[in-house]
Image (cartoon, rainbow, N blue to C red; front, side, top):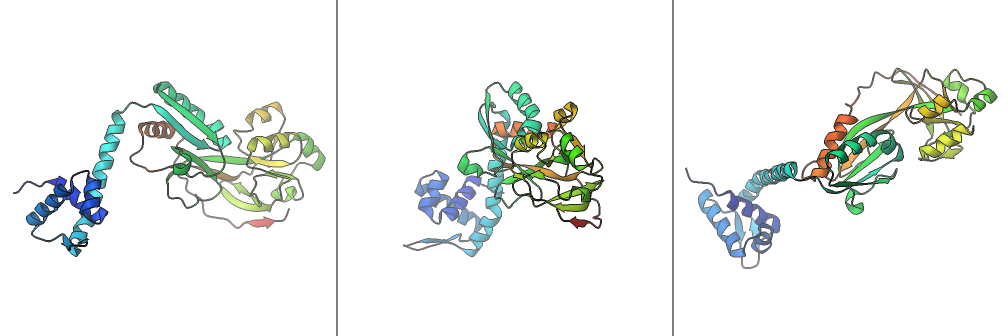
Length: 312
């Protein structure tokens, strides 16, 4: 059995990708004469012509295209395996750039950051606070966290859901005294609300199942949860926030949970990355620790019950 020269196969793939021997040789980082010789050897071994050559151009044959389609992904996988193996032994250093909404950073990333930085003294982390989903390549981020009520928007980046943020309803005691204690979602009709910039309605869930929906027109509409929290403390309206985010204010008596038998739809938090593979060592170790600290499986939704829509 003849020895297979896999370098010739890889050069063949680069010539196909380059559309000719000149560009293919540059992609393979070999002289043009070496690329031509490699393809000639491969054709001789296989007993088939891989390219049609004229004085003006080189075109891959049908058989050559078939072989390329099968072989090229294997070389791509080998390069990814090699890069991952190298990153596994590489020193974790440099700067890790992360974009995250405020709530995710303050509630869910602190422990991960602490553990990663303690384990890797040569690493530095830059965290930018942003609600918007950035273009990781254009803005230079290694990772970006995104919150959404529904599914993740279409994206060319790899993504993974890492956590659900529970939400409930809160108001200042003074507002409750002025308007009365609500006992059902219907009782919130006409109440002033403090919501996200794109809130049009609030969902009311019991045991994980949505049973009612209230249309809202927030007096303050902002993705800044801190601003909504302070406005709620000042009695400007009822708001929808994470229980973890308002724990201190509940203990102080500045806020009261409204309709405690109900929750709202959770926010889904995704982490985006340029690619699942070929990732820097800093990204890999951060995601590993993140999985240990906040990673949760996708939850199964119970069968939907009939719901009613309520006007504000």
